[in-house]
Image 1: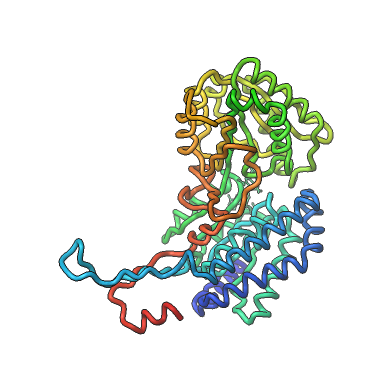
Image 2: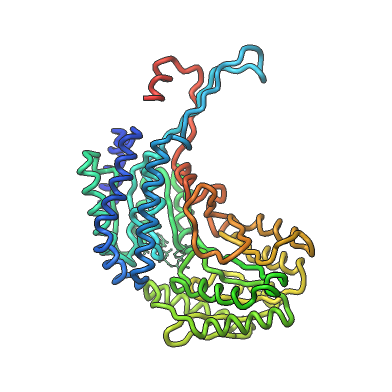
Length: 462
Ligand code: NAP
């Protein structure tokens, strides 16, 4: 495909010429992109709102986060904290104690294919976390635009390319490929010179692209963030104290962004009996006052409608039906029905939540294992390790990349302590994060220099 070949060839050229080889260049580019984003924010937000329906307040916050991420990576590169050189002087004597002089440095992987997400038109799209972390690592980026926000993509890329040009960098540092149909994305990941892929989207699409990465003559890493159910475990201690407030907070989280967040809570394990029943009533009442906006695009709406029909047909009791002005759907069932149904154990992308009644910590653990890999697990009321809470925490840690002990999983802080990833299907590389400083390390490869001559050592600090 000519367009793909042109964009990748230019990225290869930029990488060969070490356009992002110096820290100074990377810092200037990341800060320049953040400044340009701020300067064009009002225009970009208006375009994004018309294409995604996400609303100006949410999009304004997302732009702020995107600029923050770009500047965070600029600071990290400038300080050289994460990718600093590790010097291991020679030790005399026989092995294993004795060894030659070793220096561990890093090499950038090369051109990265970055698939924009539909649900984060800024923070996980053209200038989002994947792009910022790849550029910080010194990798040129070829963006596969998402068809859900084509005008925003085009305008953001135009703005980014003008920053690249103004800084006198090779134009291949930042490229775009778009087009109807899956062929564009396929030929991008198939391109022999693409070194890694970053992807946020569906399990189906992610698996197809990951398989292509592995089927190449030279397989490459696929950093995919696919689906996540984000179960919440509501323990009796929490419901005794805060049931009403928790129900209202949960209603807000379910409906936020019309549920189109990778961290939207899809399942709540509730104690069977009076406390759980009361919570279900309170949640229903809170959702009766809630509203949602239109979904991102027709395809996502159709998929949501299809999935809630499947859930309805799986033997659950529906508590909240979508209505005019609010898409929320809530159903309730017991653990046996949940355990027997694959449909109930799969993500419904949108404002849907399933309440699963449980009788013991053992049952919570069974339910969590059935959910499987997830970005988050939230534990409400885990104030002491008694009554099997320690056992629930062990399982939560096994299946999730982030365990919360308060509040709701929507809202992902961009900070060093963050981990946004988890076992499959939440991520295809559970040891990596797509949010926070460590995201940059996905695009760097350690290289050991053994007994390096002086000039090589000096060049490392240049
Ligand atoms: P998607 O259908 O997976 O598309 C994402 C990107 O991947 C698009 O650029 C798409 O290109 C490309 N793509 C998809 N399948 C492909 C294939 N077989 N070969 C090559 N390229 C392929 O995701 P979406 O449109 O954003 O939303 C659909 C569903 O994804 C949602 O209903 C939801 O389940 C899930 N989703 C999850 C997250 C998350 O954070 N985990 C975020 C967003 C969406 P084309 O458009 O050109 O096909």
